[in-house]
Length: 205
Image 1 (spheres, rainbow, N blue to C red):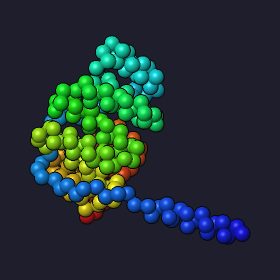
Image 2 (spheres, rainbow, N blue to C red):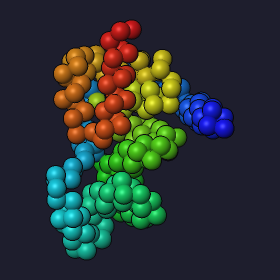
Image 3 (tube, helix red, strand yellow):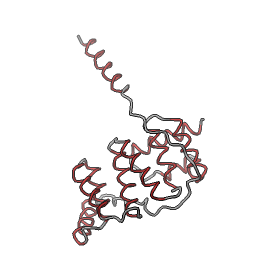
Image 4 (cartoon, one colour):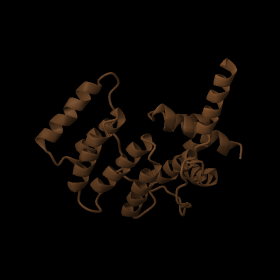
């Protein structure tokens, strides 16, 4: 009986591991992706002071309910904590307060893309980032390494390699293990692990 139970658990684990992530549309890099983008910024939570940080954001929103940056940051915090309803509410409010096509709208879409990534909603991430790039009108520096990570996560390794090579060509920090570690030191652990795995594969290509 114990043997049968163990075998059943093993089969369930294998079946779970075999579930594939849906492939994203194939977009290849076209350019150098070295353009600045002030919209791609995130205010990290101070270590050990999350409650105070949240209070400061709430105070900013109470003072100005159309504070796009504060709304998008609070939405991200809600998303991190699993409160998807409030996260969507704040992202929607931030978009409504943003000038269409302006840097604030790009910031909200960029931030919402990362939030969706952390919730394993890669299609939503792809859609928001593609829209952000289109609104930028150029070749924002973050696009190459971000799409590399996204495609690697969905198992589209060839595209991930192409985008990572583009990131490495644009910024030498992506060409070494130490440089990569420095670039991703503020990322969440799962993001760091995936990017390090991608770099290792890229280095051995």
